Image 1: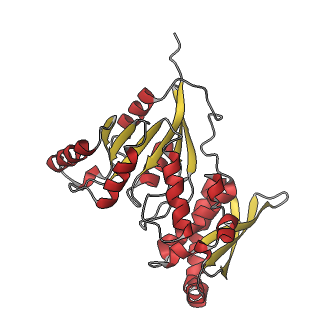
Image 2: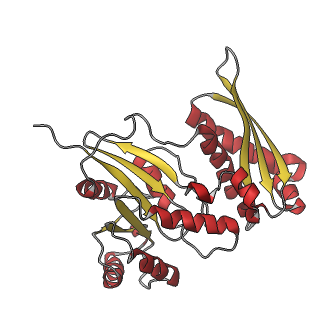
Image 3: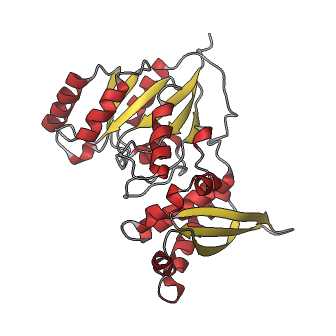
Length: 301
């Protein structure tokens, strides 16, 4: 007798920088969602797909829920909140702090309005001992009636199998929405631009990275050669930032390009010729027109 096939949509939510993108990349086994130690790294909902013999899970990686300081911030928060109503399971990811932070209390209040089953996923358990973990579980259980509570470490790859088993248990029976060899529904251009932005986030300092956007202006395969020519533009908000991104004698820009090229080649399975330019667009994070131009359109949420 054939085992019934389950499929559905799973949303990852939580404060910025709790490990949502790291967890999703671990579950999928591919680096799709941008990872950085800086908060507010993920700007768009990224859909990735995990297909096994018995289920297909479409993960929606949302921006971290935070207090907005710009129109871009408003877009990110709205994107995260909208995803709660359109999925089969919500994975609420936290760090193992015994005291519940105010920002987590605000998320818990939002979750009380949601009928979707919510799993509490306690990440970074490799950083605490068992008595501390039990206290975290006790404190959060007093605040919300979670469908499941699953401690794990996304970075160390601990206990993700338990999470997947529980996801399958809660998903409805359903079809394969996507071909089984497909791991994301995102256009190649978007993933390439996110890889470049990740390298900038990693290499640059403080507030500059969150004032940058990356646009891929051209992606073309050379005729009769396994080489793809990619042209990209990094937009920043200030002239002073432009100099920092370029670096002394172009050293920083070369480093960003070199690091990005390595990951892009791995993703596209092709040799890459990458050219990057820097342009200043003042206050682009508060311009509706520029936000739409860079792919952050609230109408698409």
